[in-house]
Image (cartoon, rainbow, N blue to C red; front, side, top):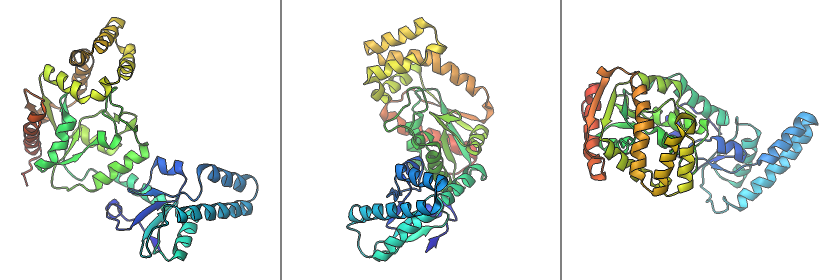
Amino acid sequence: MALTLTSLAQVAAFDFDAVIDVRSPSEYAEDHLPGAINLPVLDDAERARVGTIYKQNSPFRARKLGAALVARNAARHLEGPLADMPGGWRPLVYCWRGGQRSGSFATILGQVGWRVELVEGGYKAWRKLVVEELQERPVRAPVVVLDGNTGSAKTEVLGLLAAEGLQVIDLEGLANHRGSLFGDMPGGQPSQKAFEGRLATALAGLDPVRPVVVEAESSRVGNLAVPKQLWAAMCAAPRVRISAPLVARADYLARAYADVTDDPARLAAVVERLRPVHAAEVIETWLGLAGQGAYPDLARDLMERHYDPRYEKHRARFAPEREALVETPSLAPDALRSLASGVAAAARRLTGSARD
């Protein structure tokens, strides 16, 4: 039985016991349906081998080899990760476009007695829904951009806004990157396609009545591009800007980036990446502060000389009459809840929204 994908909401609401991606590990790593596990019926080397024979030798020989490899790998999965699945187990299986790989594996699972279903059109059907959401549909809810200079605790405040009744799109969380030279996160960034899949799912689930807050970013988060439709909405959106004293921001950064300061070599390497845009004596000053462990002083000097001027230049592009300023004297952990309440109130004023 084949399942036709009609919406991202349908995918998010799947009630199958497992979603199985039978493509090769590299295909799965680039992107896959939400929650899918990878049980490849051809690994990367096997897929390349079969493809080469198909193109250069004989389609018949390629299909015969492919069938043998699929059967062998299916047996390995049946004796391994699927060994303890009960008789009523109900999996959903897909490959690249719903063809031979998923069909062959589904046939074997069906012969076991499991209630297996296939995705009509495979991964390509999922990707089509993602592209439609990101490229063809306007953002469903009124967008508000959360702005503020480096160290304004925007990401933490963003995480507190759901409790204030607002919707949130956490681009940095979806991209697994903190959006700066110092922003690398454990595990690295997902592929562009995987990022887009996560983002499209989040956008598809928005309530059109309530505002959605997005943190101010450039058009890229680390190495990943923000899709044009969302970027256009962010550029046109009203902005709530957090204003905090430089000292408070420096202390916050030293606390928030402890993973970077705990690795002196990593910290020095990131500072070195600023050499093309700053004088040698400035770089040496920063390296000296890092070597001394003077992290709040380093953060303060980086903001004064590098980040704040760039933020102000970027901010000059946006209309000031569509901005609300929320000031805070402190960014200590116990002050962030009150700050989030102020941001939520400002977002509602800008969008004319009432609290639920």
